[in-house]
Length: 106
Length: 219
Image 1 (spheres, each protein chain N blue to C red):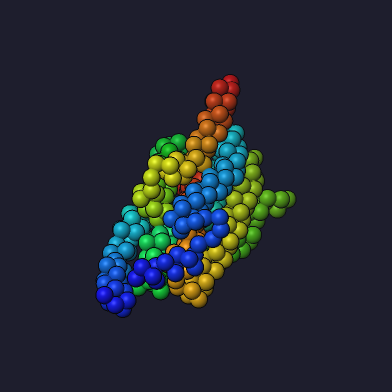
Image 2 (cartoon, rainbow over the protein chains, first blue to last red):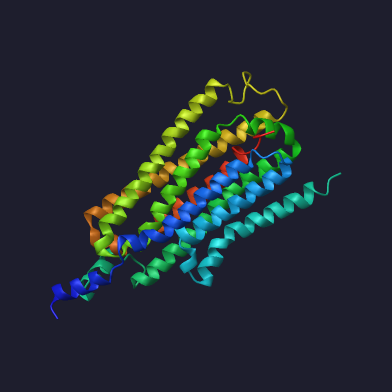
């Protein structure tokens, strides 16, 4: 088989633009809806604590969407995911220590 | 791409001390995630400070949050999400030579959206200065603790903007280098590393938006 025909065969295996774009586009749409819901929820007549908790939950969902789809963590193995989680694990430890202190103050 | 072409593309992207491109790609990605973890820790210190002061001055932080511009904050959040989606397409498209120019177009889309973010941020800062929202003797809000909120606001948004400027530089550099050498572009782990950095910039902004722009709305 000539080099040119091999090239054509390999190029024909390449995904189309539509197939590459489809999933990120759907996730983007969902994240924009989450953003709109988050902004809308900020105006609801509910206690501040409930609003903040909801806003942070929506932010966590957005971060998960960005990390797993746009940063492709969903394709990665356990080791890479552990590396990716490291920063968030330290963040959780720091906040746990802060709240165990401030929460215990009279 | 033929085997010979693939091989020469891998050679163009391979750097010492790695012996093959797969190992280099894995190492770069892992190193990048370790770097991003250190970045998260850096911002975590600021977020921890914010949390402590918000629990100390809950009403002042709520009132001050209502003075940030939800229009600029929300629009910029949407802009960064779209740019992240564009950037998320790049690694999977770049490895196919037939999609190389499309991947580079997506890089430019992300960079231009990043610039749009900075332009809007500039307008927002100008508005904030006009409304005397910079901590100091002329500060607009007299509630005790409100200046602390805006001290966090200016620090966090400025540090984030610096990260974004670096990201725009990295993305533009990748797009230019990729156009000069498409073989290198199809194999280099720099594509993945740049996309990861851009993702982090968006992750940080997602949290910044929630803690600085959403408090103080409604009744």
